[in-house]
Image (cartoon, rainbow, N blue to C red; front, side, top):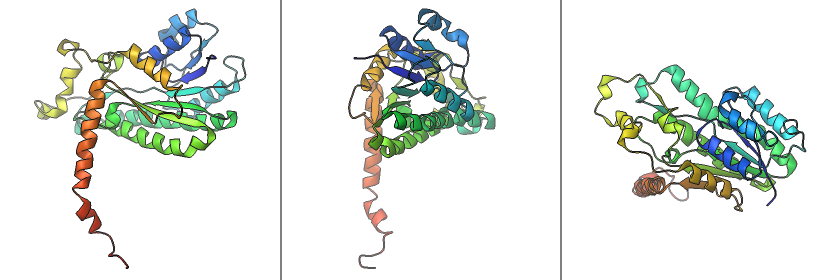
Length: 285
């Protein structure tokens, strides 16, 4: 298999860093965006010919377009500019009951997890069309299908980006562009144990489901079951699957929880058949 070129946002930690490490080790090229070059100095030193780490704040749409345009122009590697895979990975977790969150926290979460991902995909599409195809991988979460108390804004962004990506997948399939939404379960990354942000908690929500996440964030209560290295390997392998799988669930707990949730949801819809039909015009009218 010939080497690919990947554009990945947020490679300083978590899945982004693991993906980048595995790809560079196998000989692929990676344009991996970061907020600080210091966090990937090791990769830059070990792979000077195949790794570039442009600085990027994904909340800045103009900056997103600039990085994408430079990657596809070939200026970062001085090559033909083909980018085979675009991975929208940058994001973080924000925990707390809805009324515990500040307006600034809400705005920043939407700007990063939702608008940043939308900006990246929109910026990449004309280039992917022009080169005759490629693959987009949107890192979501099984929290894009399942909701838990204390995670409302995180779910809002993941449910939102999944709807966006699923619609866009239908729009661009005819151009040879495949889109895969990745839905990992809990994994042993900085997302849970380092970079997670917590709202200013209110005593009113103590001993309620809204603060159950506090136990999850404490490694003393048990580590997440997901192995980031194995998850990253499955994501890389998915790029070879044709047609592109629309969703890729990683982790047995995540899959079980998703299936249980969807079954309950379908049962709830089925129970509304008569109610739904009662709002239609009678036949013939």
